[in-house]
Image 1 (cartoon, rainbow, N blue to C red):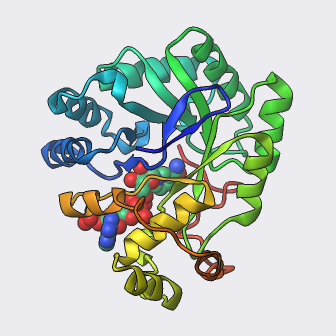
Image 2 (cartoon, rainbow, N blue to C red):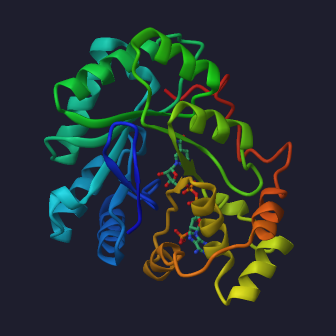
Image 3 (tube, rainbow, N blue to C red):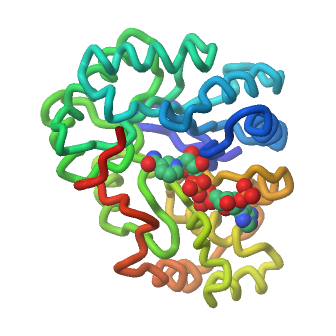
Length: 276
Ligand SMILES: NC(=O)c1ccc[n+]([C@@H]2O[C@H](COP(=O)([O-])OP(=O)(O)OC[C@H]3O[C@@H](n4cnc5c(N)ncnc54)[C@H](OP(=O)(O)O)[C@@H]3O)[C@@H](O)[C@H]2O)c1
């Protein structure tokens, strides 16, 4: 698996596995299957209520712990400094792990105004070795500059909504300028995946691959790390198999050109969304 080097020197796989909303026995089976087909980056969150399932899948897979990159996320109700520290300890307990490889602030919840306290807590947890890499999700430039100015510590990752209908050129550029790796959530576009949009369908036809593979290859060539979710083993395998072909500059531009002013999937505006 190709990797990216984060600004803290650690490696992150070029594609990860999204685990929302995989829960219960079926959820464990889906995550075990994902590890078996080759995913090494697993994306969970306190609010997905499946950290236990992800931890159980890791143990059942038999893959050595050090080969996996486990990422979870801090919910809005835990943004206070002490609450954030207790929250990460809770995540570790549910996962059955003694270290998270990456932990993100799930949403900035700016109306609460406590995301900088949460960031200070993550900086301390990284120093103490409970979390290897620290980052954020759904942060705008304003939120990023505030935490960097207040702590001097730049997030390693910013996980944002990113798919062909919402390609986020400004936010990708802002992350890159700060040395922050962009991860893409809902990388296929979730249920509204633009599989039949002409630039996607034509590239798939020309290369003998699926529309999903074209979109994930577009993500990889943008320099972003997509974290597609699939409960279906054949699609899990398909979504990893995007390193054997390349999209041309014209194809890349045409897919990015599918961006729309109303391309956001749901009310996920970081300035107003409250993720409790
Ligand atoms: N940070 C945040 O705020 C945030 C927000 C949303 C999501 N996330 C993370 O991002 C992950 C991925 O996002 P997502 O699950 O919303 O959307 P997604 O990965 O873009 O799409 C998932 C959907 O696409 C289907 N699918 C997957 N591969 C396919 C393929 N090759 N062909 C056709 N259909 C395919 C899946 O169905 P099957 O399962 O039936 O195959 C599922 O319905 C989540 O699991 C979560 O970890 C983070």
